[in-house]
Image (tube, rainbow, N blue to C red; front, side):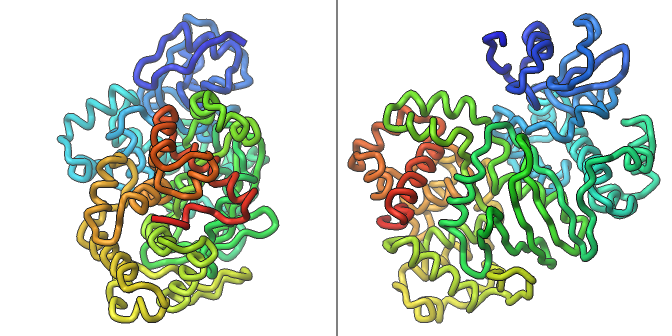
Amino acid sequence: MPDIAPPSPAVLDPALCYRALLTRDARFDGRFFTAVRTTGIYCRPVCPAQTPKPENCTFYPSAAAAEVAGYRSCLRCRPERAPSAAPAHRLVARAMALIAAGARPDGLPARLGIGERQLRRLFAAHLGASPAQVAQTRRNLLARQLVEETDLPLTEVALASGFESLRRFNHVFLTLYGRPPSAMRRVGSRRTGGEEGGELTLSLPFRPPYDWEGVLRLLAAHAIPGVETVAEGRYHRLIRVGAHHGRITLAAGGADHLRAQITFPALRALPEIVARLRGLLDLGADPGPIAAVLACDPRLAPAIARRPGLRLPGAWDAFETAVRVILAQQVSLTAARGLAGRLAALYGQPVESGIAGLTALFPEPARLVAARETLSRDLNMPRARAAAIVGLAEALLAAPDLLDRGQGLEAAVARLTAIPGIGPWTAQCIALMALGEPDAFPPQDVGLQRAAGLDGRALAAAAEAWRPWRAYAAIHLWLHAIATQGENPHALVA
């Protein structure tokens, strides 16, 4: 295999891309798409079809850019299964996360604090398409996945993927794939979902390798009793989106995907559910560059070798995870999980889930604000810690973007530490676990210090060499501590 490095999403070198295409280099999957002028089709670089001549190829940084240029997606390599490649530009990455969660493209400039023309220029430079075109392509690819992987009626597929009408849904399929959705379903031999009761199963692609066992151990170590549980190699949890609630089950899939079983009554919430699951599982990460940086440190090299592809398990709900971190101040993980479970039982919404161990939805911010007078007593914890939870809830109600992903580590920590009762350790842990910030790192953590064999000052200095992936270093160290000490040490000292 040629010794070539993945290109920047913003600049594609045709010669480099063609070399990757010739070797079907999986490192490039999702980083660019090959459009073939003679067929009018665009493919992933790992497509098994015969390699086209270089003069017939045009390379695009995103599926949206290829579709804007008039190309149809390949029916063999299925571009909707390509692992995602996060844009290098922070604002573009944040905008992409908002689009994935269901935000309207015309509302992005206000949420990001920039002008519409500036946002369009950034999208054109990094993705080759406008925000609206990117959103449309995401909708189209989700629709295709639902057609091929589930037995949902086509009217429900159109609704779940965001189409306003069945006519528009059919027209898009005819335009993009050259056939109606019903014809694609007849040849879709990989369908696995669409069961009764609002339940369906979808694949969640990732860039291999993916250490599902390690991620599952971390999820189990932090699971809030009554809200989430791990059993027999599967992760189960209750979920809420808007006024509706349901449950999800995550399990290993194939070499390049996990499986998500989703039970939810409102199909229109499906794009947001999928986006939030991808954030929870850190499916957008590229393990290659992360391992290359961390393995240079002899303290981390053995852990990287043991667990290639370990991800940064995030949050289904950032507020829930942030509260769990605050509860962990000055107590053990076992005690913190017990407090979180009691909080859910006392103030959450009881649910009949049909799965052992899932009994309640985690309380929403307004519910905890209303409980300010009783929270400390009911949970038998210091008043300052209860006040910090209430303060976080009030801050989130006042600024709904407080716990948004993609705002940047420094900005997130500054906003969090402005809340009384949230110090640097708590803010860094929230940024790491709830916001998925890849460089978040709490050197004050006694458990990390023990795992690394360093004091706080020495650990902070050593961690400079791990930038911009310090959060992944912390995850490796914490997982090592769980395995050797039976306790996640991040909960020992704030």
